[in-house]
Length: 191
Image (cartoon, rainbow, N blue to C red):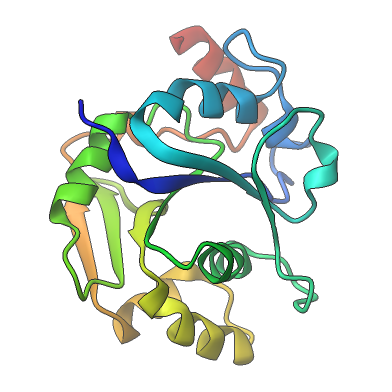
């Protein structure tokens, strides 16, 4: 597979309230943390890798971190996305840390469908759309700011006001995410 010429940002700043502990810091796949697992497995396929978090000080490893914009009291994936796009100022691939089975080929398909003028390319599967398995362009920043000004923090809130494409994938399996302890256990068994 050829290198995807966009940076990948692992979104690792979630609350993890359903898990009961910080998902990004859970051991996984022979690595000290799920975040390190994601970085290691995806590094060969992207031009650069970054980790987005509310506060990068929680991580005890070296990486290129993007902290959330401190001007927002509320932290959310939309604040993280704004922070990422403002810092990198280039189209970016984003992936939630808690989806360890999303393949590089999924991003290759998203990238092949990304055209100039697109604000977002979002993966979908039979059961859901996956806002944190997507490509976002800096052109969506104005829309994100407008939504945050209305205290709207859901990423999907920007789609109706932007040039967004949804790319359908046949299976839900690669998008399995770890929200609860039993899902974390199942994911470890699937490795």
